[in-house]
Amino acid sequence: MNLKELTQLCHKIILTEHFPQLTSSFHESHAESLLTLFAERISYGIKGKYPRTFTDKTPIALWSWKVIDDELLTPVPESQLKKARTQRMLVGKKLTHLHQFLELCSDFSTFDSPEKVSKLNQEYEFYTKFMQRENSSDWKQRKRRHNEVTTEEGAPANSKGNKGP
Image (tube, rainbow, N blue to C red):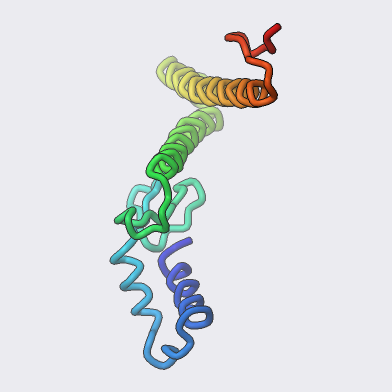
């Protein structure tokens, strides 16, 4: 969502759901000023050569709004905020490597140049490493949850994730 769209949405919500009495005095420009004061738009993906931070809607840029001061948010554990931002960053990195890999694959001259083939292999390796790490952490989380459930049911879980005797 770019700045204009977010401004219109916030302006509408403020006037219809919270302060209908401000209809004649609270304009979209006020909402825009508040938004830019308290939040910033960050790209976690692939930005164009000259990105227009407030208007760009390129899907592969993965634009996201971030509140500048986390204390303004409803109490959310810092660990949850950090986890969400880390996930966005990782998705951006995976997208970048996958996009570069696909661009190299679609370039017919790639396979005529040893340098480009090497770059193609490198991008593929980067992408597969990200996927392996992600799959490994998913598996560890599932195993941890299984062990917790097993332990809660009264049977202690051993180190291999199986029920004890």
